[in-house]
Image (cartoon, rainbow, N blue to C red):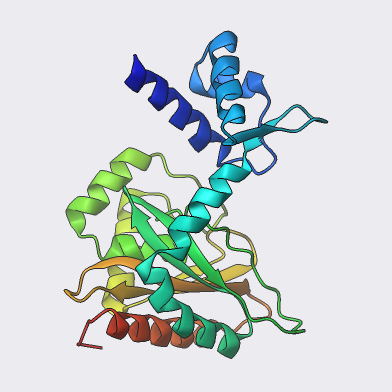
Length: 253
């Protein structure tokens, strides 16, 4: 019973993490298959512990500030994020845009750190959300990490995620299309997203290698297609990823 309670609480937190403006209790019940009384009881307990809060106007439930505090501690103590900070700042300055760091977590690719270029530049910047998920078939960061995971990993993830969401007319969703795209990403050593996740938006990502050559993280940058040069994005994130890889002890870059 205790484990079931933990699972339910975690499922509520995971659900709320996907909705910036929160959800009413009716939708929480519908999406998780919980009775109203059960959902209310869990939500009240999470509120008391600061993990969830309720908007007094809309009555929607959202993640609480305690979640931010806990994630901040984790991010600040993360070795990869610390090592990547300086190369990412150099890349952000070069591009005059935001650069972000992503890592695989239980088969999902998650943004764990962002570095911005702080100036009056007119270039559009994207607020890549720390904790946000990068779809492996549409986002550059998701593509490059799965590209280095091998065929078995791809099959496992594809099976779990199918049918894939078609974010734009350019999004690849079939098994063979996605697999071929990932093979291309690995062969050239970087990935691109050309309006596959959002219309008018391009992105590039490059793999970060650990000392043993394995890839579980990447660095990426995103911009408006009409304002940002894709070759510049590719060159900068590739150089940045190589610098981080060297700092992690990978000697072949």
